[in-house]
Image (cartoon, rainbow, N blue to C red; front, top):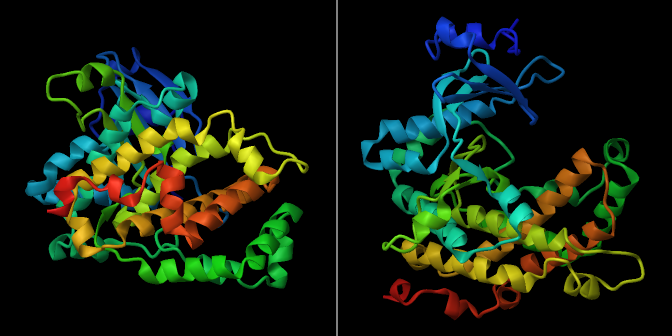
Length: 391
């Protein structure tokens, strides 16, 4: 039987691994952090905090092994000294126990969740999105088409459907098993999806275009990004925009992937702020619901366009290798929105008028990516490409 972590035995475990001492135990605090995994935040008397995570067991008594992929990313940065500085862009993992599926991080208490920041502050500063674009571009550029790096990940990678867009096989045909697995709302989603023949074709084409060529996060969304509590002071320094104000965390699906997928996913996460602020009903046309959203798309467009411009300024070579890169990013954004609908069906078992609106937006992004660029970013594709990237 595997070791099952709890509030009662976490200190014994940390002490046995040399991560804290017996003397620190009596002066420390333990807090349960609600999440899909079992997470404990341990506050030590010297001000240091440890986040101790254990994957939950499924009905067969096994884990999905996602922490192995997370640790693989951190091991990658340690294995190759020339990219070791990338660790400053990631979470601070310090210990991994494969046998018991436990991973320990130094808790980054001088950062905050970016999704939470946006929700509470309703402030979409372009300094932040510039930093996201620059950081993501650095990770992609520094690992791009390195055979040695690719072999590192392929040696220990797990086959997972979270990386490649394989939706057509799941959605093009409803089997009898599906009726027992999904709620009535889910069947409504299947019916709508299958009504749009061009949508299935667009996703199949996107799957064919998927080109693994660098280290990618593969689950990039706003709540997997941390923002420095001092971000304003840092970005106001003479150096201007800084890429040190954010960290990308939760690399549980990290591996060798397609950079357009990462960029599309984070743009989709921004769009969900707009889409989830809609008030929908059966009598209001979808276009009207989108226009009357509490957080209008126009409010997010400066951040979205800045994110793309920053990415391309820091990784201009991607356009030489893939001239259709921007169109692919927009399509992967649409694909990520469909994945978000699937997640809502899986966990909340609902597909309402809001879901129908999101599906319509996703369809536009996937089927008409060029036309969607100006809609999403508020400017033409040529204006999103910095001059230096055309040299």
